[in-house]
View 1: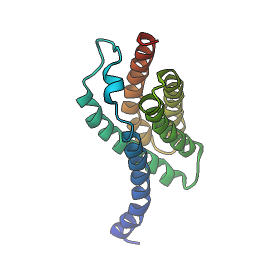
View 2: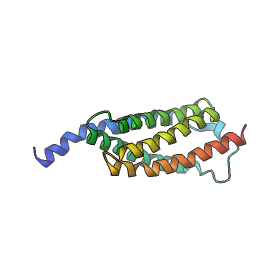
View 3: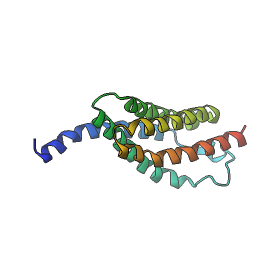
View 4: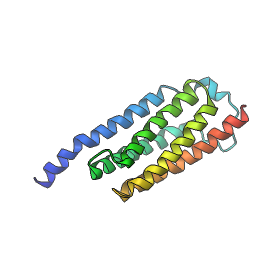
Length: 158
């Protein structure tokens, strides 16, 4: 099989990962901050709303590529791939819990589990792709920051 044909044969599986992430991202976007969030007390280090869209766009691309790299390298539903799917579900759930049903406390539990799952992916993915592990590092950093922000918002607003 030629190099071009091999690359083309990988494209459909990459598209599957891109679509999965896009569905999670767009579903999460259904729960916009709105007036409820605008009226919450936030810490002084809360970023402006305009920062979140570009950051998440880049992170979602990295998430899709990382999942695809590990799935492709493992050729099966390896533990790392299972952690990848778990983090995607927890990622979606956070938007629903925080913005959808206005439950910052439950969202804090979710995001703590999300962060743990991200770290679990980083550790288990290394066996299959160090690149995939590294692609999750910015995601871990951002979710770590978001966890602290979620905690402060929950604490400040009882």
